[in-house]
Image 1 (cartoon, protein in one colour):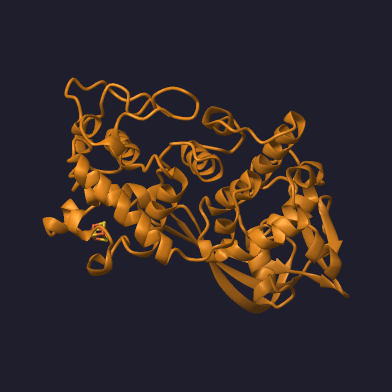
Image 2: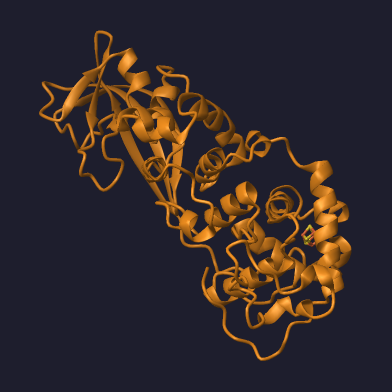
Length: 377
Ligand code: SF4
């Protein structure tokens, strides 16, 4: 984790109350975020910090959703869930998590899997670099003979950032690292009534330091999950449910009536709307698709339905349906059109029904095939 700026004012939280003394982590040294004293909102009453921890823990024990990855301390399974949850909602991840672990129950199964099998299992979750990085991590762990058990080693795995390393190391190994994602930034900005823009890296760093101070060193994994759960189910972006929040009496934003004003955020980026036509060209029981080259920067090795620009001599017969797909600030409207084309060139292949279920398909192709009911998932 990044080193914080030094602050000459000793934080109250280090001085008098036992549970918030300057902790050492299980790697044998003081956590870098609390060494020397944090700035900003961390200078809070230590008793208040302890109350937040205690109330959060009690609330989480009775209210946590029974998510499948909460039933295990297996670091591999926790890593799989955390990688899947990057950029994907919990409800979408659950069926993929369960089927993925059925197919690849250990790092060794995942490490040895052919890439096309891996991508087919991930197909529909999107952001496929996550799957490739997860497999690279599995290969490193399989070569090492055991899952790394320190924060720096976990952080070094491909595709693992600060948040994922903190989540895995705290949940699987009980290491004292606060997991700080967008939900936790929102919760901490409200708890501390942070007036700064959370798009600003200094403000985020300040809130990260605060999150580290709030961490319950007696049970970092539970605390991190409780913070995430609070952000996901109670401290919601537009409509925080303050009347049922376990820490409402300790929340500075609530006290000041600012819960709906915070966090302060930069203006949203401009949205771009784009319409594209996807061609569905059939020959008996086969469909025409093309495969992205293996050195392609995006979605290498995935199969896609063609568009009209790829097949300039194609002609449209009938509109079959449409769907929307968003990537960052682009909103695409895809129209699926039954078409015909004379002899497609190199790079195209005809796939049968089995190919559609076993080969990795891009997310837009998968959605198009769902629209025309050629696949279910
Ligand atoms: S009281 Fe409201 S704003 Fe404060 S943490 Fe709870 S839900 Fe969020």
